[in-house]
Length: 284
Ligand SMILES: CCCCCCC/C=C/C(=O)SCCNC(=O)CCNC(=O)[C@H](O)C(C)(C)COP(=O)(O)OP(=O)(O)OC[C@H]1O[C@@H](n2cnc3c(N)ncnc32)[C@H](O)[C@@H]1OP(=O)(O)O
Ligand SMILES: NC(=O)C1=CN([C@@H]2O[C@H](COP(=O)(O)OP(=O)(O)OC[C@H]3O[C@@H](n4cnc5c(N)ncnc54)[C@H](OP(=O)(O)O)[C@@H]3O)[C@@H](O)[C@H]2O)C=CC1
Image (cartoon, rainbow, N blue to C red; front, side):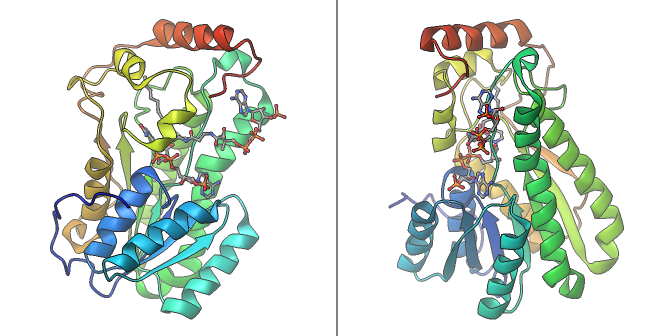
């Protein structure tokens, strides 16, 4: 059971709202789902594995909230359509979409093949587009809504992650374009770009959190907590953010204050980890 932090927002902030959080079974997505439920929203938790999303929904029910866990892959357009129909038959509407699901692997660009590049683009750009378009078609063109994309700090690229830098940059420009085109339907769209945040997901990488911090440009010297990101997502998604659209907010411990590149250090650390493992891919 997750240790719930002190509540920051009013318990009725999201009263009568229905929110869908992709990747809501772990990390920042789970923290967002739990806090949104504590603010009164009915929550749909989406992810590929059923266990983590069921666990999150059960935690919400345990404190008296309402939640529905639906398994699905954001890359699968047919499944997304089914998910939207299930939400319609259960709750009748969808007010908030948090496009949080995503992930990538670390690799020097020189060693990345086309399939690997496309895999990460599909997971982080095309998946978010498909979710957003389906939410708008099924619900938000009708009654408005708010979409928050979780991206990453890629202001000056991201060494070792050319695929995800391209995908997240694509999400940013997609979000800004949609914010302009869809304002007339009452749809707001924004991005939250986390710096390095302590989550289960960081376990996928071959270096320790301490090594991440050394390579990182964060001036605070410590990682973010999932609640730092959840709080910002909720602000933007809720009526508190009703005059904000088309924005990207960096929640990054000052990582973007200075743009010193860590290119050599990053590649060296990754290549070292790869040699240590003796395999072709940099896997955790
Ligand atoms: C200085 C600090 C910087 C901080 C940086 C930002 C920190 C970000 C942190 C986070 O995002 S935490 C969230 C963490 N979660 C993840 O990142 C998820 C981990 N990754 C995955 O689950 C998977 O890698 C994936 C991205 C979802 C892809 O999985 P999928 O099952 O769709 O593809 P695969 O069949 O495994 O692979 C397809 C294709 O992709 C290439 N490839 C895959 N893995 C690697 C690898 N480790 N190295 C190189 N290439 C890889 C490859 O072409 C694969 O095809 P095949 O070779 O298998 O035919
Ligand atoms: N932690 C960090 O420092 C940073 C993270 N980010 C990004 O923030 C987001 C959340 O990260 P974090 O909480 O750390 O990550 P986690 O790995 O803990 O969570 C990612 C979640 O997304 C789900 N997911 C991944 N791919 C898909 C898919 N194709 N379809 C449906 N669900 C999917 C996973 O569940 P399942 O596997 O069951 O599908 C998982 O629950 C991600 O987009 C991440 O890349 C960005 C910058 C930094």
